[in-house]
Length: 122
Image (cartoon, rainbow, N blue to C red; front, top):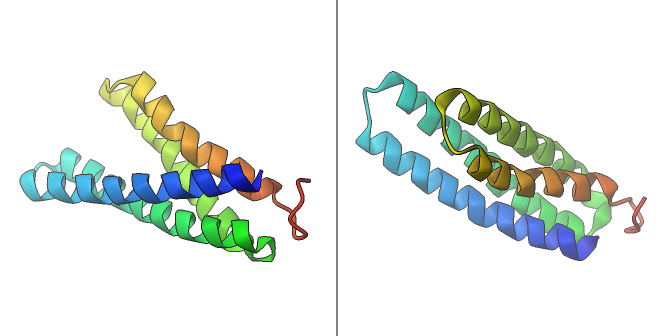
């Protein structure tokens, strides 16, 4: 479980950086389009949660007694992923792509919640 947690944490870091960069580039190019600006800001915020969750996840995978921040930011990242799914439903975006993007934060959250203080699976 710890190995999967580390993998998910690294994927969260990579996805978070990509999301922040994508949101920033889109925001710079689409300034003034209120709906698109809101989506870009959403990408930046969820990307920041993903980056923070990835950092705390790597720390918790090495020392399970420090899992509380990983669970908190994992929850925020999972909620952001679910909101992204809802947005995809209403905007006509690719639902398959949105589900694929939501799998890593949800899997991360499950791993973070299942790591006990002594490092064993609950």
